Length: 620
Image (cartoon, rainbow, N blue to C red; front, top):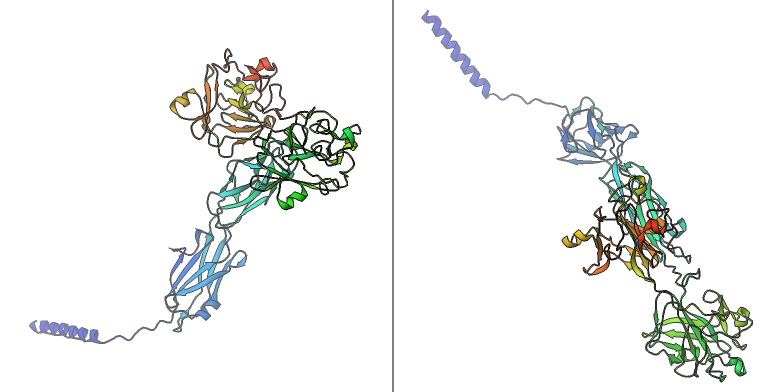
C-alpha cells in the first residue's frame, strides 16, 4: 500500500515539473489576416446597423483593426441612397485606421442610406476584409419650422422711404425655406416697389430679408396703407396668420385745396417790360417808370412759412459780380399760401389783393426784356430759387409791353398775360383773371380729440374695431384729428386714464414711427384687430390691451417723451352734461370745430364713426 502511495506522489511531482517547463516555452504567434471594423459611429454616437432617426447632415466614423491601404479601400467604398450615390468628403486619422465620411449634399428625410465596403485586401499589411461591411441608417422625418414676418419700421415716406421686411424661422432646418409674399391695402402696386416677392431662407440660416421702397409721385393720395401677408410657404409653416401693416405717408400736400400738389416757393408772374404811358404804371404810384414798375410776383404754395429775411436777389448781370439787386429786409416772412410782390422801386399803392409788397433795395432790378435770370440766395449763399426766361418760359417774349404769367396760376406753364386774360397786361398780387389769391392757408385747430367711445353698444352693434367680436374694452376708441399743416410725431408719447395717471402707469405707449401727417385722422382702439377702411384713417391698438375708459366719467391725458402734458380730454369739462355710458360715442358736431354731443344727436343713424365724420364721410 505504501508503495502505491509513493508511486502516486512521484507521478504528481513529475506532472508539476512538466507543467513548469512547458510554461517557460514560448508559443508561436498567431497570424491573423482578417481586416475588421472595430467601431462605427454616426454623429459621434455608436450605432448598430439599421439605426433610424438620423439627421440629414451626417458624420460617419469607422475604426478599422489595421492601417488601411487607401486606394484599395476607397475603390471598395460606396455611400448610396434612394437617388443613387451620395457625394461626401473622406478623411483619415490614426495612421489611416480611422475613416470619417461627411455628406456634402443634404440627405432626404425619411430615407434609407447605406455605407458599403466590398471584400478585399484593403490593409497595408495585407489583411483582408473577408466579407462585405454594411452600415444602413434611416434619416429622421422633416419637421417644418414656424415663420414670423416683420418689418423694421411702421411707416415710410413717399419720398423714397424704405422698409426692411424680414422672415424669421423658429429654428434652423435642413431644407431651403421659401416664403411667398402677398401685398394688399389701400396703396396700389405703383405706390411702392418690393425688392422681392419671395424670400428664400437657406439651409442652416434662420432669416431672409428684402426691402420695400416707396415710389415718389405727384398724386395727392393722402395716407395709404400697405399690408404684407404670407401667401404660401415651402418647407415651413405659419402657425398664426400674420399681417404686417406699413403706413405710406404722402408728401404731396395740397395746402390751398386747388387739386394740385404744393409746388413750394415759386415765381408766378414777372413784368420785364412795363407798357408805355400810364398803362405801364404797375406799382400804382402815378408814374410809369421802366425800372420801378418792373415786378416779380412770388407765391408760397406750401404748408410752411418762408422766411426771406436777409436773402438776396440777383439778375443775370449781377449774379456774375455777386452784387445783389435786392436784399429782403428782416421780418420778410411769407406765410403758407401767401403772395409777395417785389417792385423795382417807387411807392407801390393800390389794390394788390392779399399780397405783401416790397421794392428793390437797389431801386432797379434791371430785368432785361430780351432774356434774363432771377436768382434768390439764402444767408449761406445757396440758391433757393432760380427762374430763367429761356428755360422756364420758352417761347414767351418778355419785351412786348406785358408780363409773363403762369396759366392757370401757380400750376400752369408761363404764357403772355393777354393769352391768360386779354383784358389785362399784368396783375401784380392777383390771379391773371384779376381775382384775389386765397392768401395764407387756415392753420386749422391743431391736434385734437374729435370722438371717444367709452361704452360700446352690446352685441354685434358694438364691434367698433370691426374684428367680428364685441368687447367692452377692445372696442373702446379715441379718434384724434391732426387738423394742422404740420405732421405730428407721437413716437414714445404715453396715454393715461385717470387711474393710470395717478399711478404713472400708461394705458398706451405710441410706437416709434407713429407720425400723423397734416390733415389726417388717427384712431386708437382698446385692442383687437381693427378691420375695415375707417375712412382712410391711421389705426392702432392700445399696448396694454385695455384703455379702461370709465363710463361714469374719466380723463384722457397724453404726455410727451419728456413727461410734459401734450393733450387732455376730461368728461367733466369737455363733455359736460353728456352721458358717456349710453351705448354710443360722444363726438364733436360739427366735426373738428363743434362742441361735443352724443353721436346719435349728430347722426341718428349711427352710434359711432371711427375714422370718419359723424355722417360717415371722410375728413379730408
